[in-house]
Image (cartoon, rainbow, N blue to C red; front, side, top):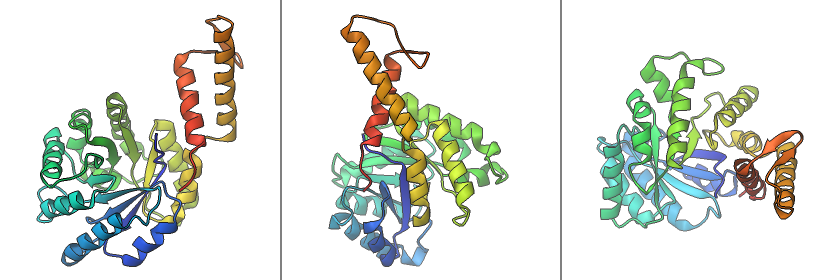
Length: 284
């Protein structure tokens, strides 16, 4: 299980940013060929990003390439370049259907992509939200849903407010779709990089909803994100107590276990083991 607490977007046209990312403690990096790159700079950024992925300079971090959306003039060549570079994931914007995912899957296969290159589908339209379930199961390559909350809010005509009340239904729907399919699900970005308090609150909300992590737009957001999505000392202690009590009861042939007055079942033990696995995962 790989932690994806913090997933940082990096502009593919910015060589300095790509170099700096080698030292950042983000769990994953997404080298961006879409929003962060001007049209005239996209061919050069494509080459720069492919070279960065193949360099091996990012250590244990997952490294993805965000290509331009299906239907744009750059999409096909982005996929071919990504297939040659073999990143950990190809992040695809504006995914609206299972057919979109299958088309990307076929293109990667035809271009010779390694079997280890996953597809991360961005859900950032009302259609994408409504079809999130079919998108999540469209391909074995697809391992994650990524929320594009800025575009989604724009498409909905929703207000940008603290607490994100207008988006909560969509966020919950995407978590449900990802979990039903056994996929990772990542929350969208927080735009105000100066508002650490607001960002921390939104990370906490995302964790409560069941998101595995959050996409980021600035290195200054990494520490808060990693901390909020990592198990707390109290959660680690409780997980150890659950496993110890369950194993002790099993050794004695008892089927009923309680910890701090609460009944413990197999599902709680699985959650506890996941908590300890995340706690034991070192920061990149």
